[in-house]
Length: 346
Image (cartoon, rainbow, N blue to C red; front, side, top):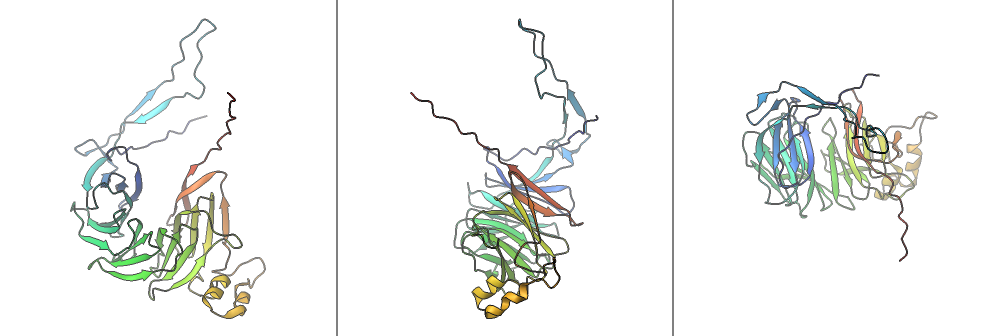
């Protein structure tokens, strides 16, 4: 059988061995932002190589697997699992380094604006910051959160607003031109670690540490719905969310090794979720009948349960992303079972 060669590019530049916490592609598909624990944001060009940014000409070096030297017990043998490895002589060039957050503070999140010129960051110094690609220092400082850790940042589709989620249990929407907070979205029981904006720009979804997804209407600033697993107390943390390109579905994944896809077409109708409606005092006990499906086997939009549940064996979902064709991509960490080690008696 013919083996499929895996091509890869390694971007080296973040210092002191700190991890890279977030990356985001520009809309041109060529430049990439990375946010690291060294307190810097770096802009990369993935199609060039070398310190001077020359255009990459891909060359491959193939190293054959060498057998172990023969021993007295028998002839040489090839190491199990060892195979030919192909390496691309390619490395993306670092175009710029941006510093603006407090020194030695990790930067948790970075996000390119849909226009591609501005980008936003969120860090452990309690602020979000707005940068432009041609200036090393921030042009706006988004200050107002009451906790030191701003966990995530996302742009509104019209590029005029940025949204941040923080450990102070709030999501704030900022005017990019003035740097002022224009919406305070609250109602979470714990800190917010993931924020997403619907493609229409009308709704905001925020996931807190307890595993509950909260939905707000940007126009009014009011919380309109909650998405949680029915019958089970939320316990697993949510690491990733993604709206479909058409805006009808919201995919959620986290520590429970499961992707849940919710139908959010009726999320704006506060009567769609019976439990949340009762909690807010909307409609009394009669709201339960509204959430029942009108067609057998088909649940109405915005219902209490997810529309589809996709389970993995032991993979924690770290990021989800819908393509323009509504294909859902995921990346995760496979957790291997740890064998129990018997204690050796003295």
